[in-house]
Image (cartoon, rainbow, N blue to C red; front, side):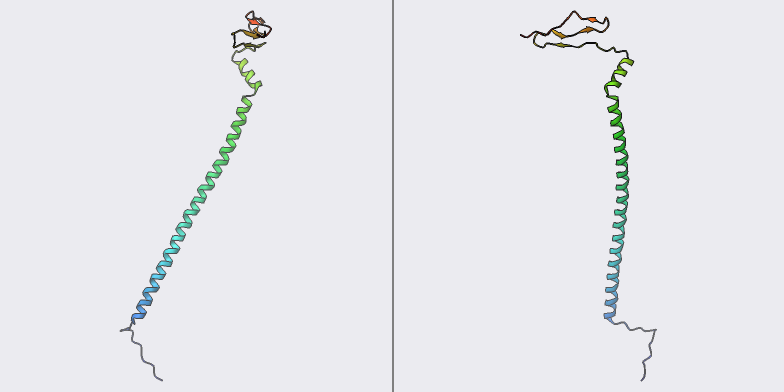
Length: 130
């Protein structure tokens, strides 16, 4: 058996081989572009997840701060605190209360002058029925 010598100086390329190599390069390029695209999308999604996590953490911190401020407002709105602050700024408590009869404009109730601590003569002590 004799084997034909292979000459490297004059390679013989068959057109089917060229087409197969070209097709292989195109398919490889498409696969490579697909993998790079997938990597890019994965990177963007990962970055988005970090931003979402950071915003959720901020939301938790802000919710805690909101709760603390709401409790502080509730405490400051309590009657005891309001009375104490009113006395601090010079207000005096009213020892009695009076009501205005809207039909005729009379003051009705146990009105007491807070400065003199005496009954107010302008207040009707008993409510009359018409």
